[in-house]
Length: 364
Image (tube, rainbow, N blue to C red; front, top):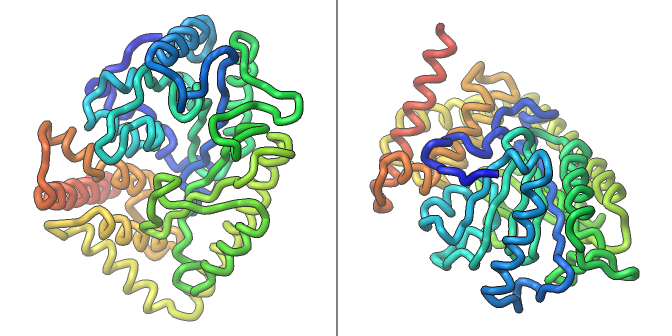
């Protein structure tokens, strides 16, 4: 396992953007995380710096002997500047807590370990000692879970996890006890929003044990008609049962969204086509774009692609725009801090260039 230089690896952790997974026109990504803690150490909320350093050293020693992570990379977050941590957050590779969002410092001895061969890795010294995770393209909770489950078995054979015969895996937050599993999908639901069915669907999923959040999970807002849907309970059911339940319910939501899009195309084709092309025109020519405005316009273009009202750009291009036109990525590209107005100008410039390149590629 080697240290990673973000500057020399511009696409680190972004394989989930490729839009090759199932239903990727509606489901951008699937993520599975499981929380684990080590026996003999205080939970993170009570751990002292020396405890956290010892946890990091113990986990690193185990991981260095364990494929596929042994051949992967490590990023120690408390040695990164704020922009680097924010960049990882924008890529959905670390949590807000680990990134030190809102101006806070990253927790001491916090780290991200990632395989370069497979989309799997772990966060160290977050809310729990370990958060094993995988992030994949499209709608694939079972496939994503298998990656994390394999890593869990390997780590569990090398490290003593905190476990109770009645409560299962012990975690800092009681709501995560049991399996410690949080599985989620990032899903695009403009059809349900425009047909005003979204509240009914969201109420329905909460009644069957799921919950929804915004683009960056807990504490974030829903923008661009993107919802993060995940399991709400972790205790009393097996990991397989939780994954199967998420797969079943989200599969139904995907079907509802497809039906809603068909209704829009049938009942208001001119309105939808105008909305789609206006969104594309603004993205293609705007000189200043706020992030929320950009995300809402990208939502319109995504809808147009799915309904075949637009022939391009590809979903992959839109996914990359969503990431690389965020604040930390814009500042990384500019090699300096940008004021709010400058960020909006640079964001619009980036979007115009990306769409123009997509058009040229389509013509070649």
